[in-house]
Figure 1: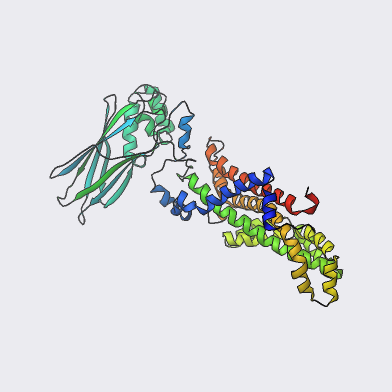
Figure 2: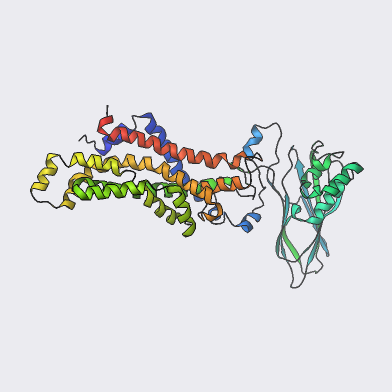
Length: 469
């Protein structure tokens, strides 16, 4: 047998370009998994499937990545958090003025007002917002709302009365025929009110077909105290923008970068967990089968052939659906069906090793079967199992992604690349042009598979005597 020390193995491994590239990709994935809490807030992982959490994040929905502004002719509005430029308090009310300088072609998805206040028991405050556009036109009482909570987050798109006023302003510039057509077909429910606010007046304003109206938008906010003891501590205006982050958001307003980053941790846990456990079981199983021989070898080989012939994916789907859908249950199920993979290879290696003189000598002096296997055969086989583990990881990751994709909401409770793809398919991301929802998780699955294949190929060349040059 050809034996290299650890230093020799490392030195030979990095002689191969595939090993260097695979190791770099692997370190990238490991870095994402380890530093996930630093790259993306931890609540993203625990609240990925909690709609109320994402409704509080004030992120735009179905927004592409922010960096596309560098490559697109049309500029998308970016996220801004604005403080009032002027504020005035009278005995009965607060007056705030916000200025939003709009210089984009694609308007923001939504506008929020966050108000932190102190309100006396059983009391309320009244909030009124007027909008003055750059062309001098006004939308009076854009927001007319009573506040009865110490902290409120007001979404302009969620207020039906505000939407009616916005479209009322826009419809005044449409033809009678267009107004009638919109009313009869109920199109106001699907049209974007932000197009009206940030477009020039004229025919087609409600459809966003007129030119963007760039300039200074002034939001005048008046909050009536009603009760003199009521107080506004802080107020902010949040312009969500129409692009967000490195990977954008999905149709539910979730940060896809956070999902992909945390998904890398789950992918590596499943991939490495399944590969290591299944390979160790296969190594011990194949070694015992080869060394003992006889009817035991025949029986063990028939069992292995039966298990490996089972259609894995349908059985996994059924069992994952019946059992509690957790990562650990999925690892357990994958190991059950993955261990037969390396058995034939390990058995053929063990058959050669058991005929070596040092093994025959150990048997001759009366060493037990288990001692011979653990001391003289397994140590010769274990170095090659590193390559087997590396080759097994991509299959485990792809299988998990397939199960998560097919089971969807019935799959694992944790965010995984497969479930992100399932959500993208559910909301027709490809048909609606949301490529940023499909490509990143799919690319990460491909990179993970490529990394371990390249590492496994290099290890195989280093540790397999038949491939050493």
